[in-house]
Image (cartoon, rainbow, N blue to C red):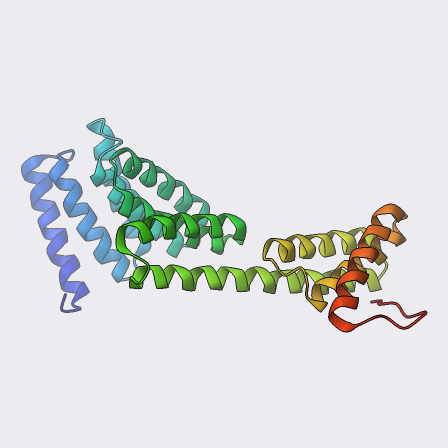
Length: 259
């Protein structure tokens, strides 16, 4: 609490050593100290040491055949935090899902919602935006029912949701630009794939009536035409024309949008 993490680690290490000598390696009381020490290591950015202690705590829980204990769920949430800090998002996701299952079985709705937020953060880091949005929305539903609409926790989840929507739109823009580059060098299959990914992300984000969306549809149509996917190209051109005429007015005779 005073910010003396080095002294905290030293004290916890001494206490853990005495506990193990007195109680043995697999006493459940050892897991609590392991967790405290792991948290201190996380504060000190010593993630490898923190991971080893969390793993040791989980091994003790397995020795007692208690895979559904709330204490183990706490260890898994801490382990997920460690893996997230190390950039191992898949492992972090695995531990969060297991922790969530324990909390669901225990009827801990508030904790399940908090874990859903963490799961959403991991999905966002993996650029799995639809799954991130779903996790955040699940958390919002629970938080609203428990805390009401005006709670600060709900505001923080809305901020995360907004960030994910922005990231998804930004990625769509990058993919659209990649499609243009592929088209210009004659790699029409890759151009079509990039435009298709951009279109899917824009549809998912609800951005389906903007000039940008119409242009991306048109560009995908051009790539499809180069690949002799004529029926697909016609559908894309028609949708693009409808959007662009609505947003920009009727196109002059003989005018067409192109890369």
